[in-house]
Length: 400
Image (cartoon, rainbow, N blue to C red):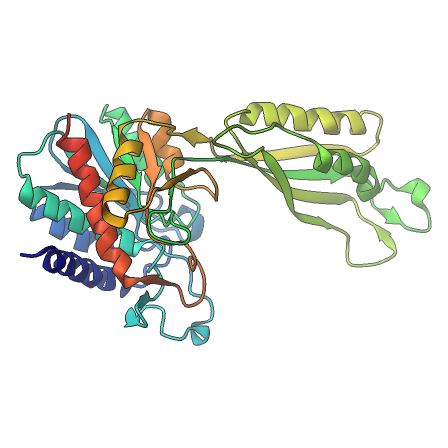
């Protein structure tokens, strides 16, 4: 079989599986049977499949039960794991789509539909790459695993984080983890994420005393008390970043107060904010600096403040090592380009895996249309990505 015929077969297989998965309206956290499709195919090439369920079977929303798949072939180290999610974000107004979002369609060289970029095609590339690798190297070194959740686009409390806790409890370690999130920018493989910033959110509540605007001496206006502190808070510098991370940033996403009447001083004001922070600082340090600012301003105020904190993820970095090298060489071999290492963007499930000591990298299709109406991905990239994944397996499991 010629190289062209081999590539065509890989692309055809990846496209077919992508479509099969995309036809399932698996809006988070409902898997809609996607993981069953994967498990059946993986079993045929020697994987042991384990479904893990976390959450309340009777609940809906945040605490709903989540289905997760841990599939593994082999029982020795190193363990290279492909991690991803079958859940997708809601479609929005379906009438705004050029093509129905759950009717995957090839048009103008693109595969259109919800989940095309984020990230059912990535999962399809995982599976096809693994199938081809195992057929060529049935007695490979180490182990191959897939960790697939349906709780990545939602609250992420009953998905990957719980699977990792389970694996850690039984001392089952992931040596290398490749997260198939859409990392590429302008062309496939031009960017891989070798780390992510941490995410620390807070809800600040300032409590004063409600009253009539005509008698301010009888009230305590929480907005007025808040403003000087907020000015210092928004102007603060947190760190300078480093060669892999930009400086830590803080952004306010919501400010709310008032009763709806223009003659009433409200009793509370709330501010919602978020830090995206580098490895140059810690969540505890950010909390300490924040409280120092507000403590100073409210020390002599009759108003009181409190902050409800939520740490969504610590920053992580895989600066160098076998996995980064394998990705760089595989991308170069398939696409001919030199990839750029980046830690930009939001969070991913890699934040739950990296703290275990695993080398973690994110590598997937282009992210130009993720979470958008008319989400789409280049069809040709599917075959290339499956080839890249297969070559990464070769470098990690076959080379010494």
